[in-house]
Image 1: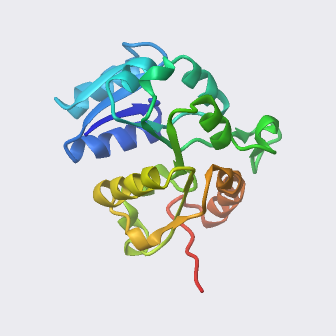
Image 2: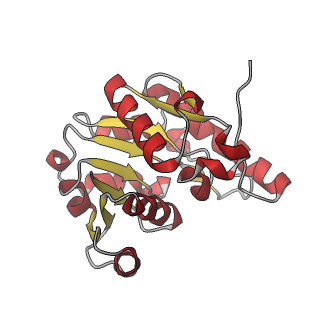
Length: 219
């Protein structure tokens, strides 16, 4: 599979590296081709890895992971030729966090009513945006077994059922998630709740003094 990973931070590198290890062809995208972090990642990741601009990564991939700072995600998307994302699944890991008032963070005011996930779907009307993985640490994103042998839950939402099914397959086949642990909360409006979890997650992290935890829903 050809996969684009937009973002050169720890989340983007973790996702891209895990996918290359599963023998996918991965292009890491940044604002401009030749980004120092992206080039360094390609050198480490080997022959299945490539780098380029956000638009390059979208153009040469079938599925896209958005691993971007939430504050700048829409600007990054706007730099991409929309036809390069048309009819493609866009997996949204972003969080619109506001740290201006210290800890815990809040949600950026422009995303308090309508989520960033919804804004991304509106910006990409011919793409299939699926929100997931934004409520956990980057290490856990790519290996669910790290916590409680994978016995914990991950939330997912999006408007297209087939796209969500495909994303679930990607999570299970590449990142060791169990299908029964993937809780589908409905359409992209549910991204409001997924993004709102994150400030609470930060407080739990501070209390536990480790980011390697997750939540489990019991009945």
